[in-house]
Length: 180
Image (cartoon, rainbow, N blue to C red; front, side, top):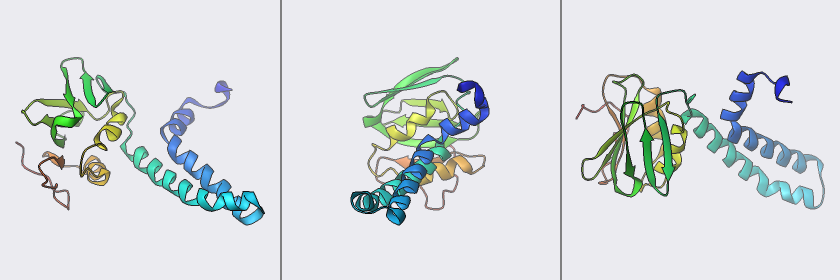
């Protein structure tokens, strides 16, 4: 079966897997609502908002995912983010993170994770396993994915701060902040 699907299409479908599942659930739910009776009709009612939520989550994850062919590997284990790169690496605890920023000055762009004690870890946005960072960051108080996704799509010369623990929020218009 694998041989009948082009590798590019298979990879694209895998990257969009949550979106495809959400569309499938929503499609079946709408079909049940329009054509079924009895229990299938009633099962379609809660499945529509569930499917739409899965579509929204899938779109968000699809926007965050990269091809994963960058330098190094990201591993997340029990609220610890580790990066193993060809030239550098390290680990930070999600619980002690003080700041998350996107630094577009390197090649490739990289996430700058800074702990409260000043320990800083730089992770290329396209490192293998970097798509799991979204789930790790979601644990942080006040974290919102939209500023992070907007920073990934913006192009500029300075560092974009997307989250800070001390309660101050990144700029609402996602302007580039000065390099620190």
